[in-house]
Image 1 (cartoon, rainbow, N blue to C red):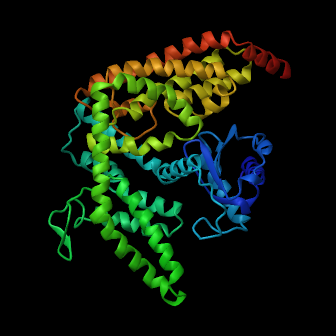
Image 2 (tube, rainbow, N blue to C red):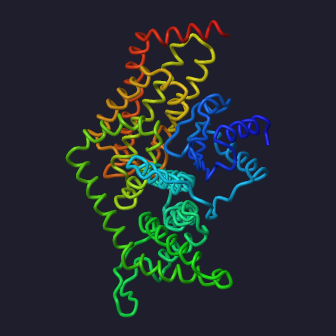
Image 3 (cartoon, rainbow, N blue to C red):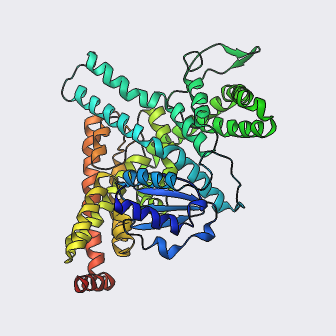
Length: 470
């Protein structure tokens, strides 16, 4: 373990109330998320002063620690430190539960936390599969690569497997979040994509017909199914005697849950997916410019509060049903690049070498699609710059909405994501419009941020203080 990560781990664990107060932990693109048992034990002042963590956001019982793009490396060493010093129950057992907050805000936070905990760990699959499909698409349509070749078949199969078996990945992660054996969640997901179940006609159980349903690439049936599975599994595990529970609990829980998924949750999930798809078709056709502008403008705020991951199921549903996302991801393109541009702008006008360097670094990262370093490193301390980013996002989003840009894969919206814009009725024009949206967002954000920060005495004083402190 590196010395810096070891110190970060010690300080972070102490600030959240010790290992015994940690319920579970995981990470997203830039944040290490720790769910604590008792948030009254959090030391907010200590959280704000951990070197290597630019910000800590407390949402209910979850502490979101902004580490940056090297969060995975820190997470791995943080996990090793936890295991080496562990004195509390594991992430998968049924330890004592603390008193639960049942307020609406708390419930909403828990729902978003659950969605994030299920989908964020499998984002590398979306990233790899989406980019690979985008590259193959460009190779075939732009460079004339044969889609009949063995090479294309192998690599397209690799990419499509990431989406086809999505119910298995979702089931596995949902089971982790619900604290039952992860393999049981994966088992339930595997049942739905099995050849004899998935998109199969004339199925029945005891003469009761089962509606033909496509499960590959879906999320909702697995999530609802594992929620049900966890209730049944935990009840059986509690009620059965220890001599038989090891054998009986898995078979009974899966034998009860799987038919429920096939009869109810699968068709229900399909209906919900179709309704969402139709809603976005309507918005794209009638009010796309307005929806784009609003979503682009509020998206940076959603990221700050950690609720942006709640829209992942919507964008995935759109890609599965339509072949592309017509709002969530392409609107976030305008937002992310505007945020990156605002950080670049602060760096550009700053006379402080450290601020300039960090601004350029966070800004470039933001334009590529990862905005947390820019948001927490610059736009929260520099509120006028934050406003400049929102203005740029709204303007860029307005153009993107008017041009009906779409994104064809679930990867972080930014410069790299333009490779996934080769979709829709006019793929080449969609990429061009996506690139113009990016340019408008960056330029608008730069102009708005420049005007606002030049008029902000607090930023000027802060820069002066930094210069004097060096």
